[in-house]
Structure formats: C-alpha cells, structure tokens
Length: 156
Figure 1 (cartoon, rainbow, N blue to C red):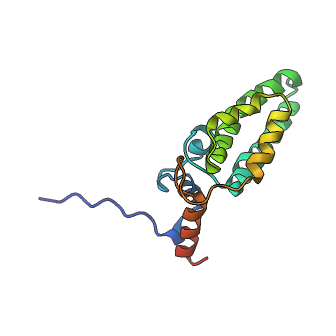
Figure 2 (cartoon, rainbow, N blue to C red; figure 1 turned 45 degrees about the vertical axis):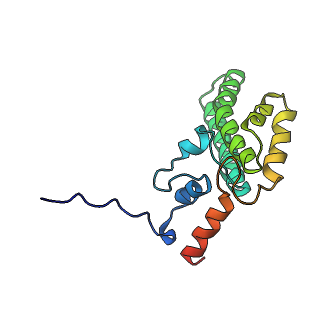
Figure 3 (cartoon, one colour; figure 1 turned 30 degrees about the horizontal axis):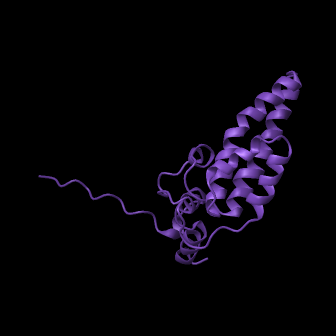
C-alpha cells in the first residue's frame, strides 16, 4: 500500500520571493501570501518599507495610471475621481491598519483617513515615520525580525 507523500517543507530562505518575504513580515504562511492579504486583510503587521512600497507608492502609481486611462477614455473627471478614490479607500485602510498594528495601535485609527484632507496626511506621516515595536506585540510577530532571519538564512 502506498503511503501518502509527506507535506512539502517550506522553501529555504534563499529561495523566498519578495511576496513570500512580505508574508513572513505579515506573520503569514509564505507559501500562501497574495497581495489580496496585504490590500484587503486587516490582520498582521508590516514594516515601514512595505508600507511605503506597497501602500503608498504602488497605490499612488496605480491611481495615476487609472486616472490617465480615464482621461484618455474621456470619462467625466468628477465622477471618475470619486470612483477611483472610493476603490482605493479600502486598500489604503488595510495597509494603514497593518502599519498601526506594527506600533501596537488598534486598526480603528485607520479610520482617521475619513477626516477630510488632514486625516490622510496625518496618517501618512505617522504610518511612514513611527518605528514599530520591537519583538512581538498583540498583533503578531515583529516583521523586521522575520525579514532579518530570512536575509541571514539567504546569505544577504
């Protein structure tokens, strides 16, 4: 009788992709991470670098591209701008919540984005500048420690 194959061992750290490293930072299984977890889920912690790269720059560039495409298509700018802002609101809140978890704040603080103009500017400054708590906190393991271990194991 054939025995079922044992579950595959996780990939060695030197083979981890950037998405898998982000999964480690979120305290997730590196084999199952998707950007959906980053942009939709509210659990876990992310370091400042992930916040700036995935939360600010990626969403900003995508917003510019979408607005450019809408201009090319001659779509009414007021309506289009409102729809684009609405579409980007949840990913912005999800990434901000994970960033606030990193410095041991509740995700409820992400709702400050709803304060017109100043709310998003304040959270951009706080989320992008405040260092996370060292070591695990009530929201999960320290993402920098997971990334540092992965880098050491990969020889970087």
